Length: 90
View (spheres, helix red, strand yellow):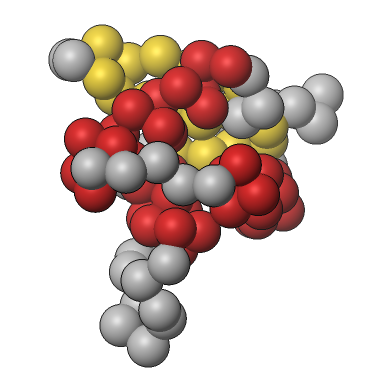
């Protein structure tokens, strides 16, 4: 996901930018997944799993030195869910 310069730098857009660095896709059964590269390992995590939320929060805090609000995290996850393509794992 490319970062658009005309968008404000709020927590939702920052979360979407972080998540956009990973492949978000919808499997044939409708589940939305993220292909996450962390510490050299590729993992496939359900978008709404604690593991993916932890990945987003950890990365967000490492980059920005504060945590997004719970509402911003929920909204970003809903946006990602709606944008997931029907591609399957790489």
